[in-house]
Length: 273
Ligand SMILES: CC(C)(COP(=O)(O)OP(=O)(O)OC[C@H]1O[C@@H](n2cnc3c(N)ncnc32)[C@H](O)[C@@H]1OP(=O)(O)O)[C@@H](O)C(=O)NCCC(=O)NCCS
Image 1 (tube, helix red, strand yellow):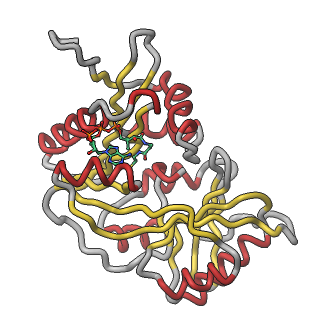
Image 2: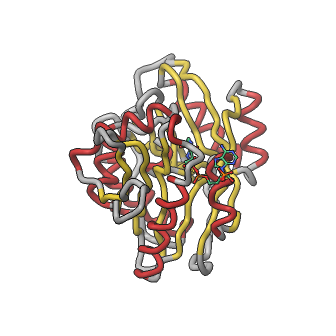
């Protein structure tokens, strides 16, 4: 404990996946064990344990490019909140990002934004998490989309390459890349719901039509993280019965590094589950 009464921050390892899943499940997040395993393999995942070695807090820094990294999985168990644990973990992630010369991005829940604002994060894109339900009038769609094309479009939109992430998400047994004309989306498993994203399309109508096609072939709950500027698409979805579950605020710490040449309709990353 380094001479203070603060519990130590430790780097987590693949065997912490189950404990991480308990934490994200406690916050009703949709990540599954495969998402945690991806983080524990590809990211620096920091954690804090209590006196019984139970994992009580986490934060991850996932470098995507020589200039950009994503902070996510910022979680503190309910009984240990408001004691500065998230702030300490964030400071450790930012310290590592600074040493590597990385701009840090994250997608904040309202509670998270209250922690990150005072640390110097600036708001960027606004997102809305929507929940819908599959209407399963047909069998689940097979993958007919081209993952390489999705990766290229994602690079154009994000301003950096996420091929390792998209190949991992797209390669799982429950994952599909679906295309309809120029619209394309990934659909994958989560802990409690299927997740659609990223979704790229040329216009709101074709994005909404693709969602309709996917929903007709899925049963059970579906989540979608929509870029708030895509107003017409959001209106389509509201009309089709999708409800807004919560906002997310994309935030940036450090210099602007990327030019977003294409705005997605819906986003994806392991942090969304
Ligand atoms: C958000 C979360 C990680 C914060 O963890 P924490 O360890 O309690 O945060 P800290 O103690 O470091 O909080 C630092 C400051 O942020 C602000 N803050 C933290 N949680 C807040 C909340 N729920 N509402 C308003 N302000 C909040 C306060 O100003 C707090 O300082 P104070 O306690 O002295 O008033 C935790 O509530 C959590 O796990 N929530 C569920 C998952 C989640 O939303 N994660 C964020 C993902 S982006």
